[in-house]
Image 1 (tube, rainbow, N blue to C red):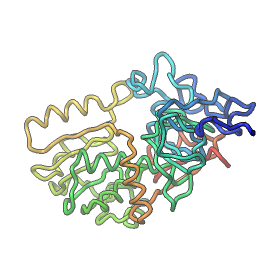
Image 2 (image 1 turned 180 degrees about the vertical axis):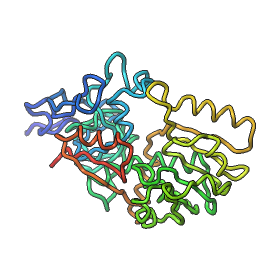
Image 3 (image 1 turned 120 degrees about the vertical axis):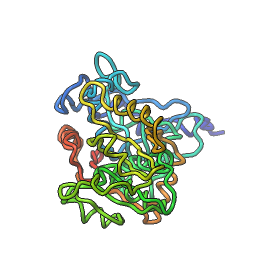
Image 4 (image 1 turned 135 degrees about the horizontal axis):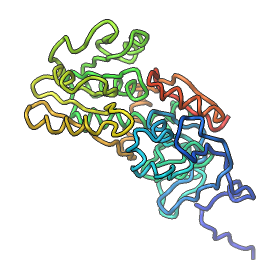
Length: 347
């Protein structure tokens, strides 16, 4: 009688269980400019019971990654994603797309070989990454791996507009920083929610904003949006370069200002802006809202449906091979990105 294979179906397949227990990865050992990063071999992660091991094909690169690499503002180092005196996690990167390589013992919603995308806590700039199953979703069928790797950023726009801002159909929404990695998603999501959207950007991005569905586009080089006075129900601020007083002045009497950025320099970042906004909200009907984006499968499913229905799409400005990760991070750190930036892990 032949032997029966009783091994669980979610163990690492032979390709992963073979002799090579390491993987190629971007390694972050110290804070500094992107040049501190190196390419090296590190131990391959092992999924826990509620995790999925993903073979990464592409990863998104954004300003949050730049903050963690440089350790600025310095408060980043005290966060769960930072570390003192050096980085807590040796491999950076969060948003990614790839193929399921192994499943934790309690994971039932995915299958080996399935194409997925989502957001890891860290470690996406590598050949393999472990991701909580609840932070993953099947890859949109209409997108490549590179395109899907940047879709999780759209959750910031979605939660900022829908949850913090309470945007509903018919409202007027201003997107400050509309041409960036999150801003291009915000324009499209606000339109999908039924809002009348005004995009604030530089002259070189005006036509792109119109193509993404903005009802009105303001070139900040030619016109000061504050001079127009109150008119918006919600302002989503992805830049943080104007005073709170200026931003509030463009809101209707019960409008909502949603802060997703705040300047503040290298030490405390947006802390003073957030505290000032919350305190000043006690004296006006205009509300100040801020939030921390929380990855979740429900929002990823919403975004997948939006993308596959043709109501939103990624706007990829640049794509870099893994060997040029420093260039990719330097680009997003300059603060003038025109869409999303991708790191190619495979190919």
